[in-house]
Image (tube, rainbow, N blue to C red):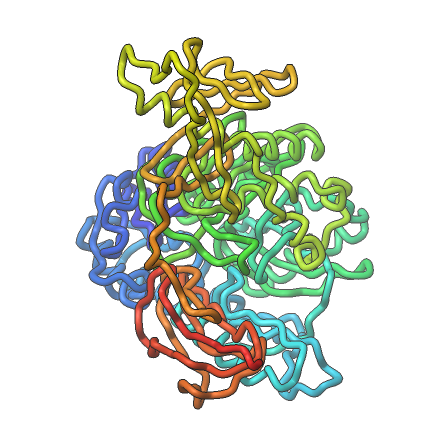
Length: 616
């Protein structure tokens, strides 16, 4: 019997596995990098072990250090979570060789399926070895791991070599394995997968389907179970193929077989020999705990005699610290507040006051809604996200809400090209026009002294306060009177430092206000209080390219120096942040007049990367 589990992972998945372990009475052990010394997963575990360093290569990808930590902490089992070493057969063997239970599939199954090239060979599918114009578009894909890392769509043959290099570097950084392969790219298909659960007694079950078609950069954003709109024949086909794949490698434990569905046909993509990020939707529909099932299987117990029955519909949204309107750039900083109301499930690795750093994935949380019907689950999830308090870095919350309410998604007509078609409309700023006034009134009340309202017997000029909202400056104007605070066009019903109620055209609207330094949150609208007098030194030369996020300059384009002519859209350099590489391109055709950064240099948001002077 397993009594103590070390989770070889971090963040949300570590916290999620610990939760089940605590329910089962199992002691928990965390590992953490120096960057994660105060992370939630390290705080909630019964014990934690430091992995010296900050980068994944120095910490969560060091299987030797993790096995040593498990032995030192007295753990008798290791759960790999997902990502990092979860699909590394050598790590699984090292765990077993140390006398520890491995809560995952046999290493032989990992070897057969964790490499996508070998998995496709097992399913009689061959990758492309020589790419021609006729093969385009193609997809460059990492052989190990997933989550969109090491994946690139190539539409022009001239871009292939550069994208292969970028994919290899990204895969090596995320998974410790730089192997990539090339396959045909099927556009605008649906991403459908099947949850597999298998015991050591020969029972293999396909626990329904999931649809994961809404993706950015080949990484899933919204998932649901069951996959809507599949014909009975196609549903049966993908479940049968999933069981066939699992049986072919004598699979044990929880796993997922993924397909691309297009024109009524299912194309095998890969088998993930681990728990998936989206496993909660299957848990909700089938009323089971997949982590608990993994532990029981590792202890040698058979699956229940009767398979669980599906009920209702579940939808999961991944909440990321990223800005979808700025090429999905990851965001960092302090997460002051994370609160999601309503009857939804929240899986997260963060709590109020935690810092979001640059070293790891920008996912903050997964929010899951379950209801008797798909429409009800959609409504419940969208409402909970819309009313959530998320105070800190920019997130994709608005994108999620609008995606869930988009007519293409509500009608279940989505595919993997959804964001390619709809991103501009989904990210269009829609701030509340009265948010700056509410912020200014709350600030006025917070600054007023007890017993002093600020009014005078003679008329006074309006008070003004400037805010940056959705990239634009807004000025709020109000006055102190004998009766209280007044503003043009609205009636101030109530105002204190945290709540403002305004009567707008006969409708009273409530505005909850929270302030953290210069950053103000009015309901779900984020504002930045601007100084009364702008800093005259905060100037950059025209054509300046500033770092959109903190990260590391990993590469500068070959032969690029100050004075080099460049064309609009030409790659200048690459930044690595949160395990993804981001390309910085020339905004105009002209001359590179400054390049103050070098490979390996750490940069902060707003740092000058280059200056391109446009050709007159």
